[in-house]
Length: 214
Image (cartoon, rainbow, N blue to C red):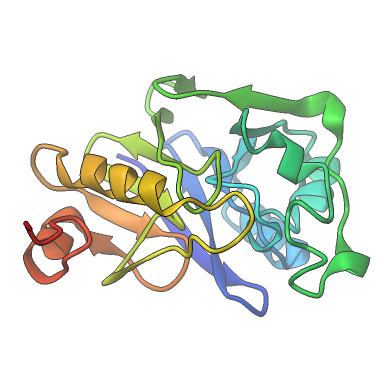
């Protein structure tokens, strides 16, 4: 069973997740800001970081990555289509969001890329399957572990991510949401902003996973 700590960070309150197994091996998902707070939580829980995973490469989701990488020495994993965003203050929207001066490029020598269907395995329990869900950005992804889904800015509770940023695409988003809606059974969904939800809640009360038939 995975242990999950949710930390809303930065002015935009993007959710950073510390996900660990019973041996304290951990991954850091979307360290968007407040590196000192993230690192303090890692120390308090005596976690052993293995990697940083990005659901997508907008600056509010990786703004603290450079500092965390320097402190822990762990690599950063991002979808291959979003790597150009990570290494650019402009493409990552840091400049657009008003954080151009705060942008730090993560150490490119330890940036790793993944693609649809890859298994990211950091221990027997700490394992995730990549679901490429473009729409919010070209390389937006969800990470699935059994009945747990980290959705980034693809799916929120009663909402979805924006598609009007550069690289966003409404058709891709619709296809990605349909794919999530077609997952068998239920999943607890840990979102990139706001609180968590479930696929069943979104199917029952929302319309994004079940668009009206025409």
